[in-house]
Length: 351
Image (cartoon, rainbow, N blue to C red; front, side):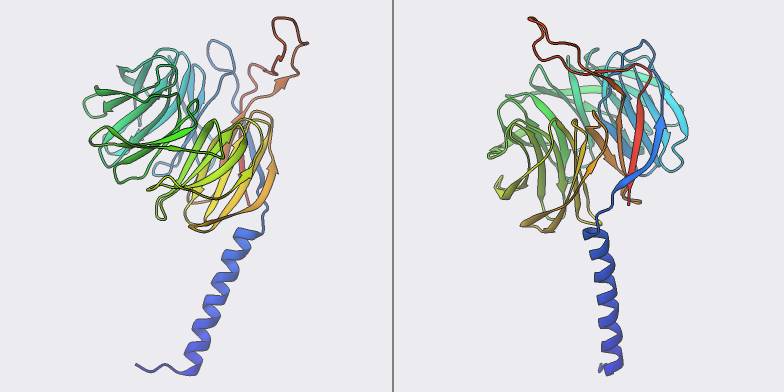
């Protein structure tokens, strides 16, 4: 069918307008603090906090906070409830079809199962000490919890609430990500590599070095283009890796100290990396073979864990207020700042 000249012009203008909007979103920078939500002290005192999890289907934010999980509305930031009775929790995995959530409790060496509607604990599963990163793999319909000190992974049947297997990993696992097709990738911090685990056969299919990165901790994935984004602490860089070959693509990008979380936004192509020194690094995936720097945003000290709302593109980080470090002593030559109890809070960043 022939098109008129006016039709071609109209289509062309539409494409130009769309490209301009996308470019303005990608290149304009401008992530800034939208909201700060004070959350108070956890039961039992202390101020430990770890992973942030955003449940896009239910519009909820789950915040690890030592002996509790704080649950907030993802749009109003109102308090939805608190999951208590924990010792030192780390992460949350959601299995929507079962109406269940799963919490890794490192101090207890177990996974706590809770009801998504009531937030009440409905079961506990033995994992191992230092149970840390946790995720639900939709391809195998299994929950995977990565145990740091034992260098292992506990695989759980979420419907039955039973352990299916324990995998020896050969290194200390950190943050993990699933591709949705049956492969799970996890950083091994002490061996400077990423492993690829088949979630159905429970076999480690590959071990890939992350050099020129080292001490890999955080990870995110572009599932469409099969790219992994890995943050490392020594040296302090972010790298992009092919998820099928393990090849590191392009140059490493410098980031701040104590990185602990990466996220990828498939709609905008943005990659974000949060660091404990209080910097949020924003990159853009220009193509499957090219990553570029967009901006670096000053956040707060300790704000190293993060999640993203894929609908609004907002970033959720949490931290506490900190006292200055104590004076160095013979026994403690490098004392660290200590979090002030009762100052835990959520930081929401957007454009």
